[in-house]
Length: 80
Image (cartoon, rainbow, N blue to C red; front, side, top):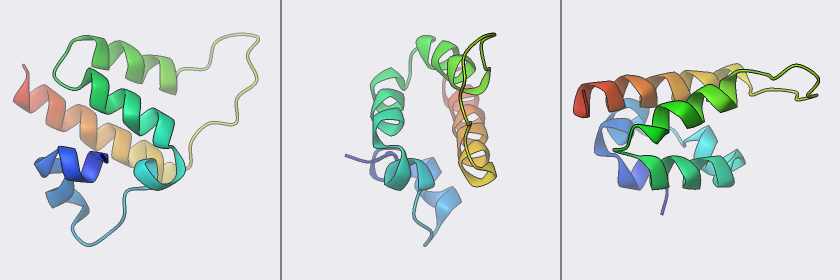
């Protein structure tokens, strides 16, 4: 599965575009699918976006961060 196929609101947001998370970060996309609908989703996003001290990570490209932000927005709306 992919996020675009699993979350219809995300598919609507993407339109004809391919999801960068699905294409370039399949492990991240799979974990998001697994946590979708649960409070742990927010913890996972926080872990992805905040670099811990002493940990060397290059981070996500801007487009991927936009997708993560949109997924958070959708999740907040669907699961308040």
